[in-house]
Image (tube, rainbow, N blue to C red; front, side):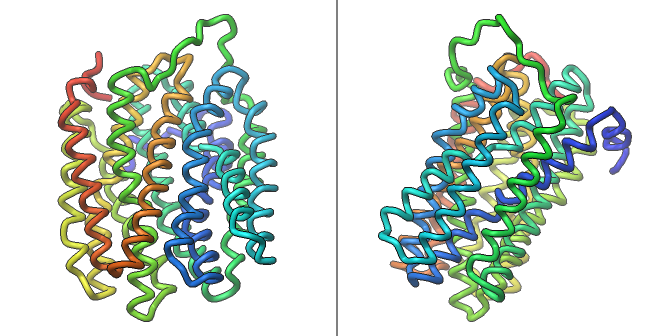
Length: 396
C-alpha cells in the first residue's frame, strides 16, 4: 500500500510545505465544533450555536473564491500572510465577545469577519502539488495523501477540541486552533520555493464556476457539506442525550477514521475506471452508509456506523480534486480548487443551521434524517450531470 507514496517527498521543499500545511489547516476540523461547544455552553441553545457556526462558514464560503483568485493573481505568500493575521484578530475578538456577553449581533459580526479571512490552505497545498507534478501519475498519490492528511485532522481535531472545551475550559479548543492556524500558515508562506508561479500577462477573465463540470462538482459538494455540518452538530447532541458529551469528538473521529482508511487504500491503487464513474459510485456508497444512523441508539454502535459511513468520503474528495485539476486551466487552478472548499463551506453552514433547529425540535436521532436526505441529493446531482465530468484523461 505504501508503494505509490514512496519517494513522493524527496523533491526539495516538499516536506516543508506539507508539514506547515498540515499544521495550518488543523483548525478546519476544530473551529466549527469549537464554536458550537462554546456558544452552547454559554447559552444552552444548539440552535444559536448552529447559527453562529453557520455565519462563520457562510462568510468563509463567500470569501473563499475571492481570496483564491487573489492568490492566482499575486501569489500565495503575498495574500495569505495579511489574511491570517486578520483572521487571528477576528477569532480572538469572537472569544472576547462571548466571554463578556456582548450583544448577539456583535458575536455574529466577529464570526463573519473570522470566516471571511479564513484561508482554504488545503487548496493551496494541492495547487503546489499540481504545480510540481503536472502530467505525472504521481499526482493521484499526492492528492490521496492530502486527503488522508485531511482525515487525520478530522480524526484528531474534533476529539481534541471536545476534550479541551468540555474538560478544561470552553475557550481552550478555539485557542489551540488559533495557535495552529497562525503558526502553520505563516510557516507555509515562508516556503516560497515550491509555490506556483504567478503567470503575468495571461488572460484571467472568467471564473472556473462557469465551467459546467466545476458547477456540478460544486453542487454535489454543497450537499456533502450539509451532511458534514449537520452530523457535526447532531452528534454532539446525540452524545449529550446519552450523558457522554465528551465522547462526541470520538464519534466524529470515527466518521473521519473511515475516510482515512479508505483514502490510503484508494490512493495506493491504479484505477482503470473513469474519474466520473468513480465519483458517482463513491457518492452512492456515501449515501448508503448514512442510511442506518437515524435508527441507532447506542454510542458504540453509532461509532461503528459512522466509521463505515466515512469510508466513501476520501474517494469522493480525491476524485473531485482530480477532476478539478483536469477541468480548470492552470492560471485559475487555485480558484477552481477553492470552489470545492467554498461549496463544502456553504453546505456546512446550512447543515449546522438546519441540524441545530431540527435537534432542538425533534431530538438528535430524528435530526440525522436530514443528513441522509442531503447525501441522497449529492448522489442525484452527481448522476444527473455526470456527462459534464468527462475529461480528456480517463484516469489519473
